[in-house]
Image 1 (cartoon, one colour):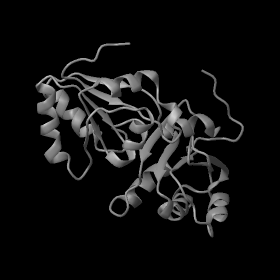
Image 2 (spheres, one colour; image 1 turned 30 degrees about the vertical axis):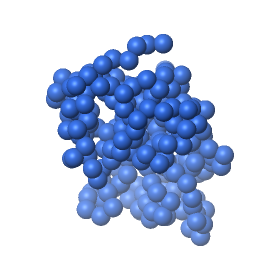
Image 3 (cartoon, rainbow, N blue to C red; image 1 turned 120 degrees about the vertical axis):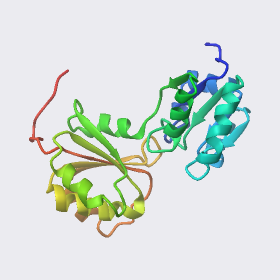
Length: 236
């Protein structure tokens, strides 16, 4: 297995649910770096305990990144190796990890990606919607800019991928229906976990299906682009 580079930043993907999805390379990196920076040390602690990883861990999230980023950069300049992990999936995707990557690059620190699980790619691969061209939008704005974003997405020809929380899913599905019209949609829930579920249909059907339901778990919404035509296929 590869030697750990001194003073490097490792962007290590972790499982999005099923702990068995951690790659051998990711496990090796987490065992052997000098420090693990985790978005939530309690959540990541479950994974590290499962693999008996005893590497020191520190907290790095959106509320402390201004204070912690220069500290981590200094550690790497002092030739300590750091692995950044998020609560689940690939760090730097819809989390504060990109701030640390930018700081590392600014200070000529080598950034090494360790690929693995990603919720939106897992959902896309099983969605049945065109995946040769897609746009990842993360979470929609809660207030300012939300309407503007939805208007823009109405014209988007590529497959659209969004993240959403359970307590906002009803509003978001209704907003998508109102601005984009009734299009094919796939809702991925609790991916790779025991209660993994995919709901396929149209936005109107999904809206009716979940209207009086309490939806739980981590959610990925995949909506057909404006150019989608039923029965269309892509090869290559």
